Length: 109
Image (cartoon, rainbow, N blue to C red):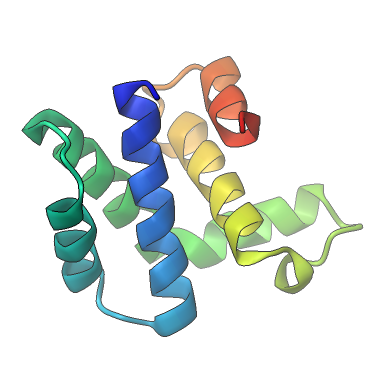
């Protein structure tokens, strides 16, 4: 797995846990990053994704729901919802990731 793909995977795990348990972002990130063996620069990327998404989850979900009305956001699985949030955040908010890359990372197994 490519290093940034691995970082996104860890961010996904953290977002999933935060959604399901409502554990604090800092605690979840500390645990996930402690368990990973990422270089510091990729730890920073994980933190950037998670701390970028958590405060604007509702806005991201509203945007997703508006563009996918056949899929009520509360009926989308937690994993899929967070994959969509990550992709949307990366190209619409972070604006450092090309759209093609964000989409590919979201759908690649």
